[in-house]
Image (tube, rainbow over all chains, first blue to last red; front, side, top):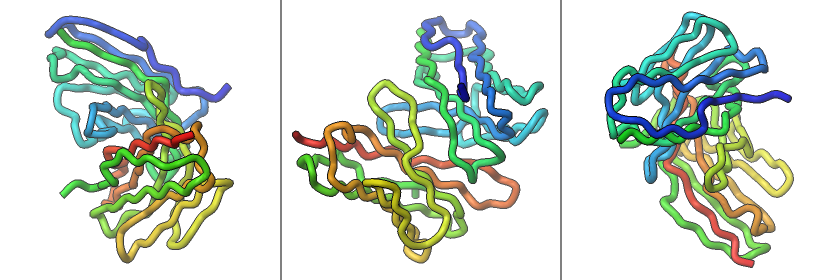
Length: 113
Length: 113
């Protein structure tokens, strides 16, 4: 089954404790991206990647890191999480770039205390 | 000015009626436009995408694009209770070598039985 898999689905942690949210897709897609969703603000793009070793900032990259060492994986790293990063996070992928429809993962709800 | 703006909603329509959702965007060179549906607590799923001016129909859904006026709309005909969800408009920004995807804040639709 074609899918985008995120882990964990839920995480409660404390300020400053490094965490990684994994994202994996099995569709051989080149484009992958991370979004956060907050009430009233819709989806905001954090980072995106056009292919292996090619990443670019979205609209809200501060406080986040990403890497793309393999085509299928695109982890989101919070080196020193803060409460304002409490949010619902989605990973998505598309065949080539942002001109194609995005396939979304199920989401990760992060709470930073 | 936000890059993508949608009717703030919520929009309440009776079952069987037409729901009309509007979206405007600021980047005149934008090329790709998407409508996603998001049920509460779920990830966005693609409803329609449109690249050219005019109408595009898929079942009960019609997307309308007017690049000169910089708006894209979604019509839902014969609305059903299962159409109750938040609808997100997404626009691919056209800047050279920039493959960001920008979302509106979403419009929540409630279909009254």
